[in-house]
Image (cartoon, rainbow, N blue to C red; front, side, top):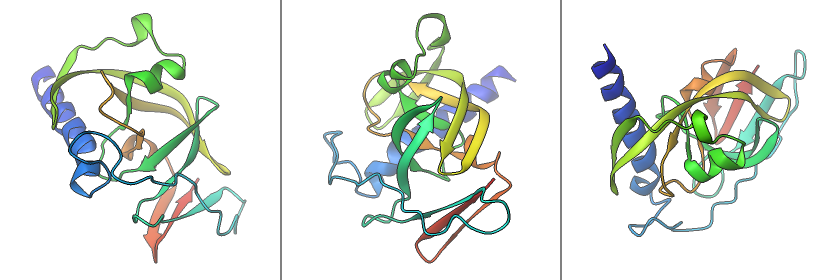
Length: 172
């Protein structure tokens, strides 16, 4: 059971770390290929109860924005291919995780080789009027991830989400 969980996490993190470089977001040196504007554009604060948020795709086609993770602003990318919200160790430390909270017990394979990973629980992730609590996340040791990836552990806690015509609607 534990072996299967580690295999799944390893695969998830490998995809999360490699997808940006496969789509030209990061060059082979691990540095941003182009500057990605991580600004979300509010298209409508709409309908029912105002707990929806619409993001427009940036010029690279990514849904990027300034999220608040545990109340702190963090530029991040939506990644529906990532099982968990995934971030670098330095981002996790900036959010207040350290010491006993970052137990790098899992070894995962990335484009830059094997790295250690830790699993944490985030208190909250917010963007606009959308807010989710108690979100599972993976932390990658080292600096191989330029921006946190907002994965399915966040998106599954929403009432729904829909991508259409270069817009991503998050429904709380």
